Image (tube, rainbow, N blue to C red; front, side, top):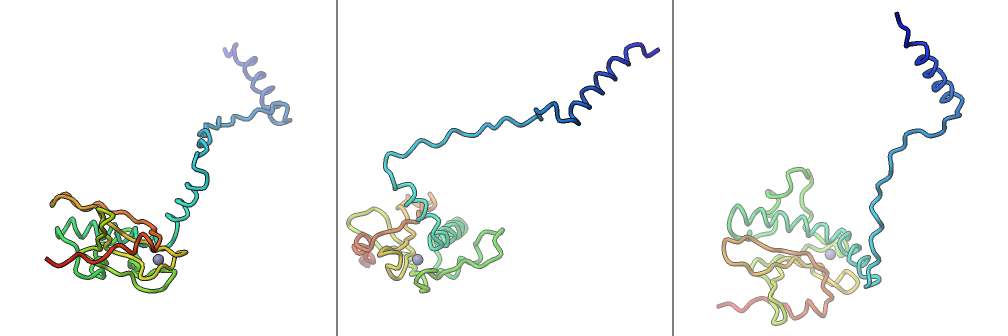
Length: 173
Ligand SMILES: [Zn+2]
């Protein structure tokens, strides 16, 4: 016989009734394990400036170019002669061609496979804005010299024009 059932049923009924009438007002709520807020940066506005630079459509386009150039280099062990050649090396998940024109100045990026060099820097600028259209600065894609076979280490950077100016084509040997 079901001797143990009536108390359980009634307990269940009471709980149900309590839920229905709203007397039990503690729905199981997932405990929010929110990450603690990031500590304030001591440098004030620097992080937000950096973020806005990285969010700039021009920087995003140059980052796409960077990825395709890296893939091209991986496959060919050299940089392409023309920037248009990277269209075959773009992200397979992105159906759109890589844009090779600055969205601010509407002028095509300048591509220098040999790079622009500066006495002030070890880096070589290989793609850059044709004009200082970004509040007096240019977005550039520059790379670190690497031992051969070590791939490319590239970065997108917004250079104030006075920092861009010292970069010139390397002297022909
Ligand atoms: Zn630009």
